Image (cartoon, rainbow, N blue to C red; front, top):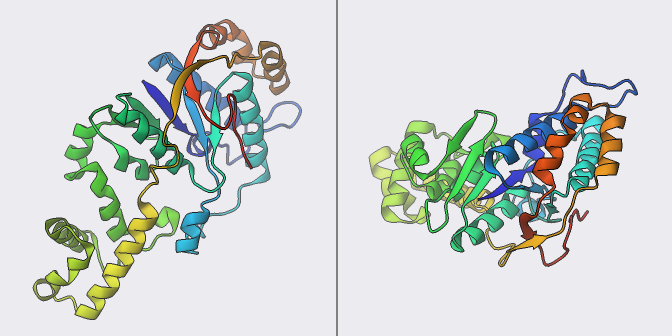
Length: 305
């Protein structure tokens, strides 16, 4: 199994908004500690070293819709500093990281997962972002999602039972409803009941452009229906993930061995006393050959700004 972790999502999950976890030197350590603790659990559970994916700048989506994610607040100085510290520690542990400068982590996750699935590899995506659920499949290689916030695994059968439609149709449904977290507006005047009606009609006639067919039955004016069609199509372009960024990722045995001396010094500096006590267990789970990704651009850590 190949594990892909959404680095920013996992970081937010362990962020310390009240800045309560500070060591004696005044350094904020909660995010780094929480992320590494979770990483260790994932490895022990699945016996494989994950690949951590970081967000780039969503330039392509902003060009289509300038208001995309405009509701997001800038990261705090403590958060940015913690991410930098975390990336350094992941490198010392030999964990491969990747960041595409022009695309979000979800798109890189989608590209890796889709390509590997077609090769017969089973993939587990660790993320609570519902957008990645559109990737879920049962074969030829499965793609499942683990949502750590709600502690639930979503495979194909569970998704179908939960949502009542195919994973790939999540793009259409969210395009009708909108996504407030990404500042994507839903179709104006449409609630969940009407959204389901529109969703069913579009699926039935296999085209967003046939939305006008429901005009008479649901008293939607033709002009309004045309505008709704435009909104839905725009949202679909924003919500659908790019699966063609990495067309041929290769799994290889690569020597990304941990730098134990520097890592030990960092644990001391950060005052991670529990990690120091567990250093033997850290050594056991990281100090063996790992099936990781060989990326054409580099053989180690790729963090392009």
